[in-house]
Image (cartoon, protein in one colour):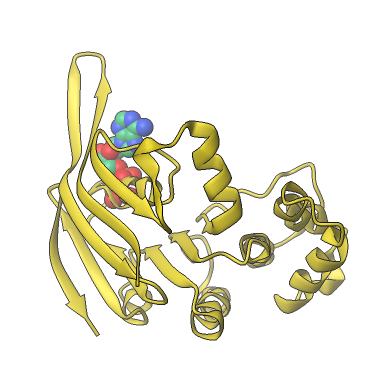
Length: 225
Ligand code: ADP
């Protein structure tokens, strides 16, 4: 089953009179359960493509169908609902809410879904990423690796059909990065969550089933494992 389908997508950023075509007629189909790395030079549009696939931004033209939703036909609110209910997102800089504890950060998506057991479920998720003893800590009281584990617990809270990750280990040392990679790939293997990640790291990319290279606004090459 195709869970993500990108058809003839272009993205043009306009600042004043200048137009920058970042993506130029991109096509991509992703099967449910697959793991994919998007690689390419800095500035080649990897983050832009990931954001369009996840409904964080909209394409200038073309269509993106995510888990049955035609994103270009949805309002911003409808896209936000798809994001909060059906996908998970992990960022290089973690993006935890600084005024909330680790536990409260993980509770956010559960409370959006009005789950009565939000607190218990969030605690379970923190324990799964090995942070049961850090639940009352604020993001500034946690190391980078711990913050990323909280953000993974938050992403898993949605029981996402797709997990998007933008340079998830980019700010971490090798050992901590490997722990994060294990958590992400275990989710992909254990529950069949589709994984789409952007990375500069060739070793991380090689752990996925499929590598997509972007250059000059186009997908240059598809490599299947
Ligand atoms: P990558 O992830 O491959 O490094 P990005 O998708 O972040 O590339 O950016 C691609 C290009 O688009 C870059 O030249 C960047 O400066 C530009 N860009 C990204 N976001 C915006 C924006 N919101 N407005 C204008 N230009 C942007």
